[in-house]
Amino acid sequence: MRKLSKKSRITAAVAGVALVAVGGGAAYAYWTTTGSGNGTATNSAGGGTVTLHATFDGGLAPGNQVDVAYTATNSTTSSTKVGELTPTVSTDNAGCLPGWFTATAETSNTLVAAGATTSVGTGTLTFNDSATENQDACKGAVVTVSVTSE
Image 1 (spheres, rainbow, N blue to C red):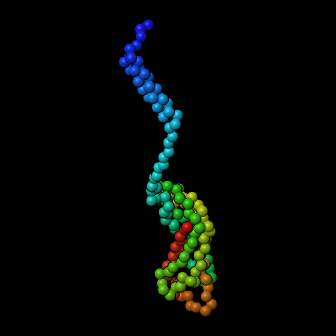
Image 2 (cartoon, rainbow, N blue to C red):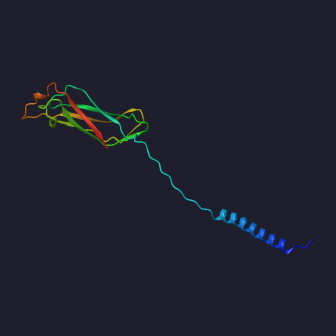
Image 3 (spheres, rainbow, N blue to C red):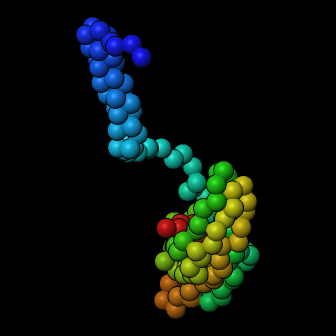
């Protein structure tokens, strides 16, 4: 075997140190690599708006009541839940007082699928009989039950 010159020994030593440094650096980086991260996304504005409907028979007279059916139409692209129903009564005749009527609704908590119309509850509409006030203004009046949900 031939003896290496001083220049060859220095070159070999530098190459060896460089090889260890590069190899050691790769090994070090491999074993100590860590990571973290996060991400965000914005949901669409849909998925929460439904149209609520109240349906009942006409011909209501003082002292009587009719059943009310409540439905929800979901025209969005995702299902949504209808919570507690809150009905209010209005009329198209100022002399026919909304306070003469009482509307009820059960709490719904019904899931309404995307693009569907679903029954979300029932209730009653009562025309309270007033013993002291003339309620003739309600003859032929249009009574509307509006409903909201939380």
